[in-house]
Length: 218
Image 1 (tube, rainbow, N blue to C red):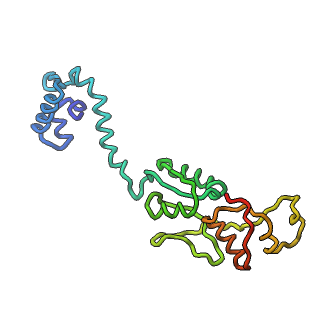
Image 2 (cartoon, rainbow, N blue to C red):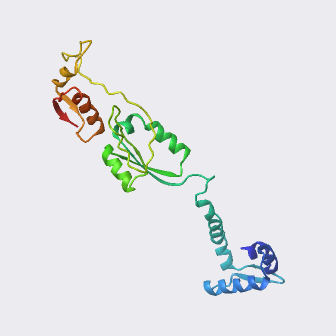
Image 3 (tube, rainbow, N blue to C red):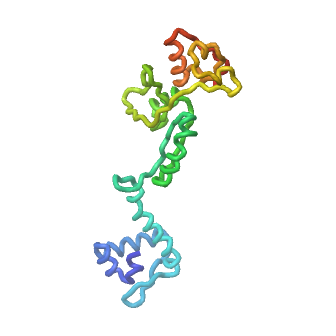
């Protein structure tokens, strides 16, 4: 390309900072490899042959792609690229993270965001196994230990107050106060036993020596 741009082996050698014989040898080797003459001599200058003109634009693209290779590699001050494997619970994914997803994609358009929606225990197991890089999970308060694997760092994102909910037509709906004993006798729809939320609910009743009537697990 230097020879094509300058029309001279000598000028091309000067531009590229090499000797003229080096340019001539490289060009002769390229012509042998391609099986075509790339330049015609016109007096003291050289001009692209028909084969050279056919290869000029593709060759410029090759050079441009090669020059762009360093930019593809991630640097501290460059754009973030790659793939982020994120795991989250369904509640967080539905009610907390949609705005975060949009903001992240807007700020880091070259990152492919992969989201897995599963339970806390499963996500922590995947985090330990290196299958995901970030896990947004439920950690129960009130004395239950945080199930964060050793070697990982946790950061609180939000706090959710759990409430018992009944239909407006339910006998308890009009009451100003309801005891845990009364709630324990009321059929309860709750999460599966392995979930952090269920463990928090069970611990609440267990502290009063009560066992809730679980009518349905989800």
